[in-house]
Image (cartoon, helix red, strand yellow):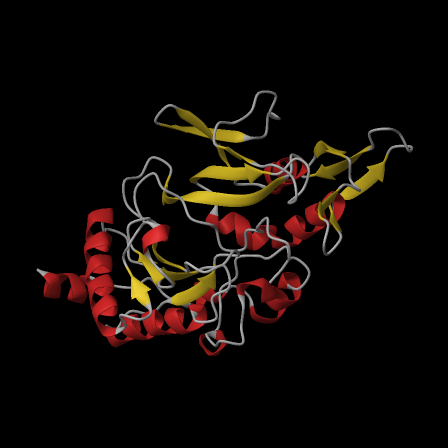
Length: 303
């Protein structure tokens, strides 16, 4: 699909429009720099979102969406948005969870509408709408240091540990400084069960690699250790979606990695809005290569 874009005559506030799936959407300030350092404008961002949409939407559809808006670009102030704002187009679907009316990011028009609002990051729930069970299993490997050359080493250790338990996984950059270990799972496991397995792995890793891993939640008490976060994966919580852009200086994108990319020379900032399209064209979605995993044998061992 090739959305059409037309710009209005130069004015104090520029406007244009795109037509997507029969819906006309206004684009305001298309030349506004959202990532000033690489020079990515709002219009380029929308183009990149359209290219990412077949992959990103598969991880946000049928989930409750939390997004982060940066109205003046990544060097300005930001705020989290959970509730659907007033005046949303009629094609935007919503779902209520608790007392919040969430946006459901399940279509390209909705994605472009959010992009025009300078929603630069997309964080879906870890469970489907109206469901109590986890959609997948994610372990967050969170560095304490802003620049952590050991983060890929830590991710490789976790992937290898899971493999030793006959569990296939894919490491993905968070798009910020961390790495998340993504495990597609068979339906039926509970968040409590996944947390029990995560706790088991965490205790092993802290004992086996005491100079690398910690389960200390408070950053000020971690020293230089990498936090093995198995607690974030819970009902009602979120993590960055695969292929979401991030509001970082390099315009990084949360990207699944090949096993041989779990190497100190590889950094999360290596994967960004200007090279992710070529990577996906060449390799597709690495997560989809992994079949849903059974955890029965590990859970029976814990019991």
